[in-house]
Length: 408
Image (cartoon, rainbow, N blue to C red):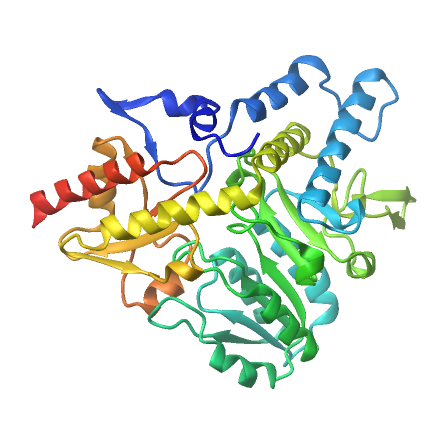
């Protein structure tokens, strides 16, 4: 397919909508959730219309078709991130559940009182709270790589943290607030040398640039479908097969078992050991369609387009009065621009932009410690994806000028 801007925009039905009379939708909130192309919507509709059935259980035609499509999506995901085996791809509800799965299985099994877990100050709550919960339960020690004023990790602090011999190192591949793309391969290599297992939050990376989990050598890698053109309600945990095999099940019930007796059970093989009960079948099929769509465009094209938009956005937004941008280094930044205006609260900014048809996010973006680091309660965040254009950014700038005119 390649990167055909006009065709891509036509593929997203919601972009035809007018938010206010004469104000077309300008959607700049893809970091929270992406819009869905027609092929994803239709793939899910086809499941419900044509072969709706439960999977892995029935031998009738509908069940076999549903099972084949569900497992085909798993293989598509495996190839998309270059995992060695489809057994290393576990479907979860979202990236949050994937991290909790690791915390409550691998973490409970392998971490003991006094063990060190290294995180960063730019983590999403999904990659903070599960470890805080486990730390409270098992008396773990949490340590953090600081964030600099430029919005990057202070890697000068990393050697001292690794000298603590952490058992686990968790970090985001790309910040959902700053857009900072962290040097994942380097971080993972250094952590492994210190003896740590590494979990990477890829919720903001897999949708926007090529990720190769084998090349990165990540032990665990998590992401969500809804941020990569797929549906809500399904995410992915990638884990190295030897690690997953040695972890206990996360949830008990149907399909995650091989044999059950009144007082004992034997868990199923990978990956089904971690997929208890009826899964999100239509959503998995939708994720498979989203992977096909992104693969047809090419992730290098996706990244190049977002880099171009981000550079243009910084050029247009930075000169505006009363406005401060967080994370401005374009060489190491994804399609996110978060900012504050000293004349208006982020919620007021977002509401005024919405009157112009421009959808942005306002708040702490599930990263309260990061905002506290910068001594602010919230930011306004514009984020870009394949269906955005420079004209969308022009509309954003026009809306911000209205805020300045009203409050300045």
